[in-house]
Image (tube, each protein chain N blue to C red):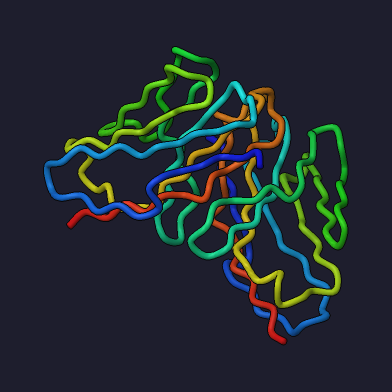
Length: 112
Length: 113
């Protein structure tokens, strides 16, 4: 089935470690996005990519990094510089022209 | 800066009721508005997208309206069912590309059997 796959669903990180969240889509979408959701809050944009080999910072990019080497893949690395990384992370994709945006099932990251 | 507000934050209704969820935005220069559903611990599912030139969109028991001039959108759910229980979020696209989406905090809907 077509869709967006995020992995892992749950991830625990020790202080000072970097972790990478995977996002793969088979919708042939050009644009991909990473959002962060905190309890009772709206979604906030971390990074977005409109095309392969290009990406831009969103509203809260500090402490995060991404790559877009393939159209279908947009991994997010949460670095040790991110001071409060415990959150629900959502990957999304779209045709990039203001049309419907599709989301993955999300990944829970907890710092222990 | 675009701000999106959803009222109420939570709503509980008995099964079978018709209900309205509200979304307001501060800058009327929008490209489109989208309504999403989110089940606990899950991703978002797109319900309806209304372009700025449209007044409303319908899908099954759902009807979304848009009034740009007043900065408001409503999501009407007819004959509510327990399976409709979820958080409903609206998002405003201010730039014609999805990286310009601004999300509200959502309305938590509970439909009681």
